[in-house]
Amino acid sequence: MQFANGHEEGDVDHIVFCTGYHFSIPFLSRLQPPIITDGVRPHNLYQHVFYSKEPTLALIGFPQRIVPFPFSQAQGAWVARVLSGRVSLPSEVEMERWIGDWTIHRGKGRSFNTLAFPLDATYINSLYELSSRAARRDGLENDGRGKRPPFWGEKEKWTRARFPLIKKASQALGSRRGEIKSLEELGFNFERDYAQEAGARL
Image 1 (cartoon, rainbow, N blue to C red):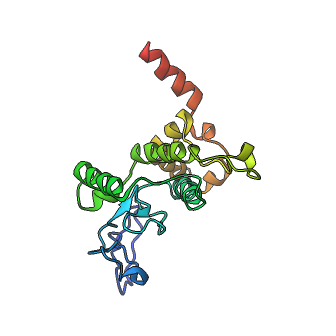
Image 2: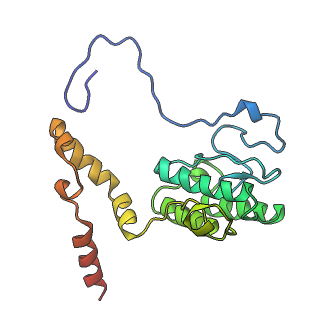
């Protein structure tokens, strides 16, 4: 067997093909309608989070091709505000309508649950907007608004769009990549690119 870098390995007993992602939540298997059917994607989740039939149940981090930590933080902030009574969910009918509309636009298969850029950025910012509607409460930080969820401005979107290029540039440095402390050192400059793009729009 030969790897992409030219290295050859002859003494191989097994090859495991990790080719996909299969959803399984057996501890919720009795729910009707189910959240998991064939494992391809979750079902009956409003905004990929709240189980529409019983919206006290929320699941975080299910979408794929995302940046997991800010994504889950955005979902968690919204869930916390809903469960604390500071934000209301729409009716079951409206939640089902959202699920149906999303299915029409994204399909019934894996694409339903795939939020690759720029969908992940749009989604994170939409949850920021939902969370920002929460009623203020005494004792919470940020003047009663609570912990701020992530919001992706132009720089975050610019960085996210370049993730594959950033990864490739970092890998090309080999062992030297540990010396790199900023995107600028890798050759990526938001201010420069943003100014150029703004000039091109004029």
